Amino acid sequence: MEIRLFTDKDAEETAQVIAETARVCNSKDYPPEFIEQHIIGLHNAEALKAFSRGRHSYVICDNGRIIGTGSIAGYWGSVTESILLTVFILPEYQGRGVGRKLIETLEQDEYFLRARRIEIPASLTAVGFYRKMGYDFKNGDTEPEDGIMYRLEKFRQV
Image (cartoon, rainbow, N blue to C red; front, side):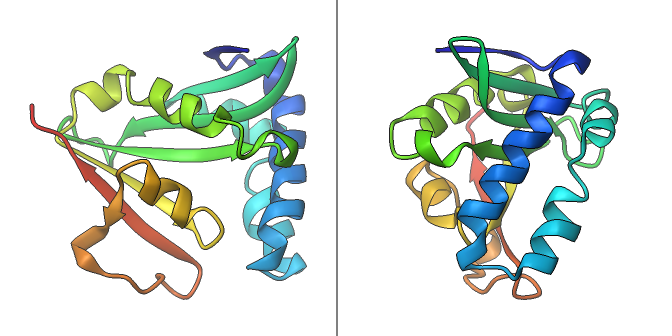
């Protein structure tokens, strides 16, 4: 497996990975209309290209096929805080260490290394995974924001 920076050429395939993952994995926690509008609708190929201009986006590939994606950026322009975004792994690759490898890569990125605090907006579906990766509830708030997602965070000693 290879993890590399996202390029505009990856946009269509990456959007398909996000759509498939959301439709399969998030369907137990969210209604189809929410998935189509808020997850897939916001992560189409053109949006992914635009997003990549302001963040470091990665893809993880298996024999040249994109099987996952994730990004990291400064949190609202801060140099001491960063945010993980758009982390998706195809369902058939989940539970095989691929997501862990992607998070570990994001945690070696300059946005992570310069930050004291890293936040991630976690779906209801993925909160358990991020907790295993060392992220905890922001301000101890264990209730999902608007019933849709959790705000998790990790602190680094810098």
